[in-house]
Length: 435
Ligand code: GLC
Image (cartoon, rainbow, N blue to C red; front, side, top):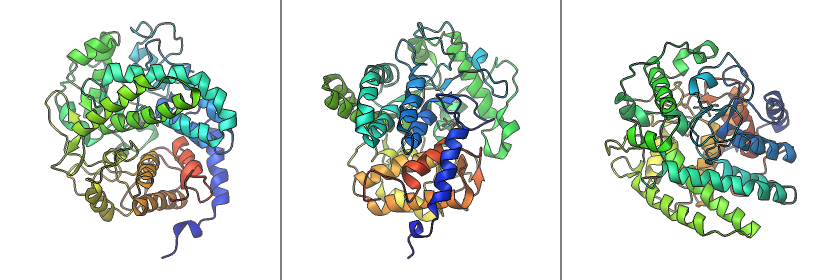
């Protein structure tokens, strides 16, 4: 079999990926893509930093530092920073109403009131590893802010051990089938009239439905009405789902933060406690019925029954657990390109609708790196090869159909370019020789 990497002419694609990162650079921070997402997003920026680290280490650190300029006094790192107003996006800062939020303190950067998968410590550690000499002082300066973010995650989201979301946007997998039951439990009465902007940029078939959107806005109003008071939201919201993305990225990050603590000579006791707690929480997300890690609705105690790409982040979280390997093999065998964000045999599967089927390069990066670390080298190699082929054949799209690779969502996408440079390109320094 020809190795896909032998046939790729990497240089023009490497150049294009660099061009995309520069194109989306707004001066110290990167937008995910012009038009559809005109602000700084939390986990997108962490990946942008990873991409910049391939060719501009100073700019890589700057991306992360700018993100932390928006950190609230209580440690929360918002999912969107609205540095400069853009009327082409909804819901903007006026809808979130976070100016007088509890916990926001003196932070002056306008932001949303929720967070996103906490990948930043893990990716900051990778950026450090790309150039330890340049990175040590930057990592040391960032360290207390990282700790305060994860302390917030543990205190405000980890009541079940696993990390929960208070809004589907927090999981970064907005319309995943994982939240269908919890979303159905919301009656979106009292949502103020609004106009969606996303469907003005992208085909509506590739986006969440209107029923989803009404509930997204309802939940924003719910938090705003409580001044983003985490205790009130956790106690009163109908929506509280323990999520594999949040849990596994938090666990991975805690392990890498611990490595940073050791390097910097900091005490690791608190982080050790988080790791134990998150491991116990992760164990609660194992759904034997589907043979995979799953989302758990904390209000009903029901699993979602969703085999998603987040299910397979367990290895990146450092779990030495092969129970879902057969499930992974089955899901991958059914897809031309993996990893689909939903099992193709599920009734909820939809090849182009966002997080209900399409392949996402960032998820592949995390999942496959975890597999390689756990010795699942064949699986890791297939996923890296699929990611490369998707990009070679279809460009730097936001996401891709697992059936035929059709590019979907926004184009010239920051994190797809970043994952190419950091990992999928044949020229990438993957940090390991094994994938
Ligand atoms: C969408 C994605 C989310 C991402 C954001 C910006 O909301 O679901 O994961 O962070 O777009 O790219």
